[in-house]
Length: 266
Image (tube, rainbow, N blue to C red; front, side, top):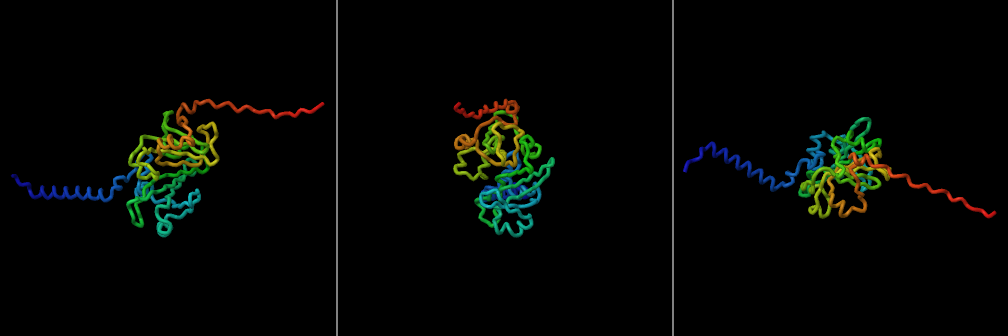
């Protein structure tokens, strides 16, 4: 049997050791393989470190008071040096402010902690992006102000509405996205990229791209869940960014009722 040269054997040994070490690390840290964006938005699924490497240090950090949309804001240095230890790192949302076409666009990133990391500073993953507009804007301006939002023009793209929001799905489901979803029975559902657009003043019955909105959320949602469990609150509509939607005729105005005139005896 021919002998393998010593240098080649040593090189093979190092390579095999490196491969075994990599496999061992993946077994111990299975969520490392999940790092990186799940969808075309480029944010959902990133670790906090990856997000900050991509966007730079946050302009501020905020934490939510209970379930209300009321927040405390902190400078990044104050949060990092003190408040993150007092409040807990996963409760802080990284905030980035931009001015685009005269509109203030504020991004806030919510995180999901790695459930297998019991340390005081667990790995955090982006689970939701909250984007606020000040002042409010027409729906048609969102693609210009939010480059991560590239809506399809296909009329049959899954789209829904209520009296205060419009929900648009984009692209195929991604199984890895279940990791950032906090929903019972999530393993039985498919999760896709979703853009949910909100209006604090409410949306008109006849929706157009000129209807004004205040903010939007980028998240992973399930079309199956909407159709099976939320059909009473989610009205299916044509994709608002399609030609077919724009060509819809406005409904006729409701008939006016005449004020009854009392009749008096002669």
